[in-house]
Length: 180
Ligand code: IMP
Image (cartoon, helix red, strand yellow):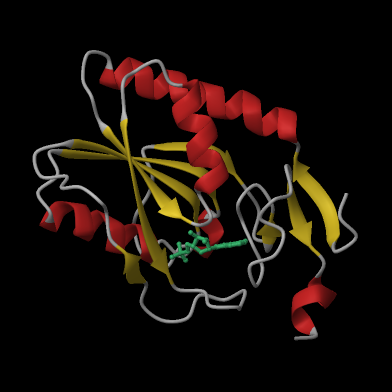
């Protein structure tokens, strides 16, 4: 384990097993169609790649970025769209892969974004959910893991752009972010 981490909460194997279940759930739902799978960068990158590779359904891939954190552990203000999609999603079934639903503000912003752009449907699959931190009433359609209220890193999730490449998900030691 990385020395800046306190405890691993999800191992590589646990993540891989649950991501396969999410992919099977999506295959069941989208059999015979070609949805657009959207990755919300950067936190969802690892989850997205593993998820779409575990799916049998034909999917198109697209990417966007919404950010609210900066280099902090507490979301700062309203999430902003930092990078737009490459293609139109008007009339399309959209699968959105999220890393974590925390306050829920990012997800509300994204739901509005896809509605405004005329998506036919939106299915949100999140790797993690921290329901105890919710500030707005929103939820994903499929949640891989519900976790306690702690600041976590790894498997795409960062603190100040670090730790994204850890293959597991771990609680970051408080001293790492409280000293900044
Ligand atoms: P929300 O808008 O508060 O729901 O925040 C969602 C975004 O905050 C996620 O997409 C993550 O990028 C980031 N985030 C929330 N909790 C954590 C965490 O524990 N570690 C790292 N990033 C987090």
